[in-house]
Amino acid sequence: MKLSTMLRQWPRSFLFRSPYTCNIKITTRCNLRCGFCGLWARPVTNELATDAYRAISTTLKATGLARAVNTGAEPLLRPDAAEIIGMFSRRGISTTLLTNGTLLTPSRLDSLCRAGLDDIGISLDSLQPEQLGQICGRPGIWPTVVNAIRLSVDRLTGGVVQVMTTVTRTNLNELPELIHFICTDLGAWSVINPVNVAPDTPSILSAHTDIPGPPMDPAAVDRAYDAVIKMKRDGLRILVSDRFLADSRHYLKTGEYAWRCDAGERYFTIFPDGALAPCSDQAPVRNIMTMKPADFRSRAYRDTVRSVQRRCKGCIFSCWREASYLFSDPSAIRERTLGLHRVFRRR
Image (cartoon, rainbow, N blue to C red; front, top):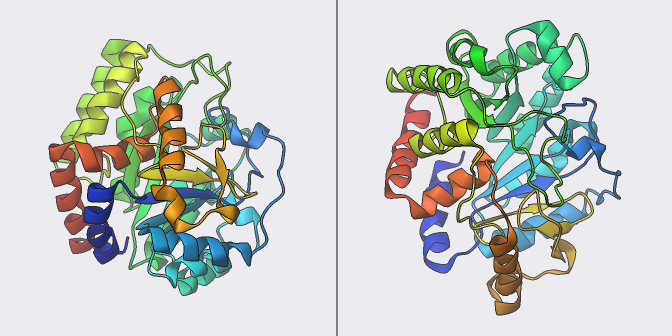
């Protein structure tokens, strides 16, 4: 994270509800078949050319955007991923890459670092190699993913390496042990997110309908979350707010996830063809290639995204919730501010 960028842009977004962060899905192609993700099952759309991201980064910089999260499905399936990262970094936007880690070689990581990558997120959903293969639909990837995390911790010395775990019935009981491994053995930061099972509405990113979601056994959820909270208080590198831990615990026990979000205003998603949606699980409302910075402040745009917000039944995606908490929950604001300083102190 570029700490100065994140802190400098926060007041502008707070006062004017201008964009703060966005997910840029540079591809919907993926080399894995994770059951808790629906992106890889979507038809492959036309992908914008590399140069298109030059215009996009210019537009987003003018809106005051603080952070661009480059992701996919699997963004490293695009050979120009580092070039795209560089276009945002050169404009002073904090850059993050989210990947499954299977394609992250030393040379690719070096090119990403040279391009200006600030942070990287790599998925790891089980301590058990066979179980991870079943979760991701591809056997034998556990050593590759773990080596990618170790490589990132070793070489991305100026940034944050976060390991992302999707909490499901399959890995709930091993969650504390998995987080301990991530934070202690690998030296990375842990981010957890419960599986999001879509309600009876069209869904883009949420789990397939055959993935069992909540409610889960309350006692099992409490055991796992009590351990996670204790580890966080003991100083382990758990990059999740107390508010999100409380909300996600409640969701896993009850299935309830209604909340008031800021989709389309504080954050949004850009798909590979440039289509812009309020969030990754909603249909597009515009195309970034035809938008000007002022459009994000227009009444027409805000009326459109607020209409989407009102119709949405909710979600449990940590990226969107944490971004909203950052502007609406004083305890989360305080915790994230202190947390950012802690991140930089421990580099």
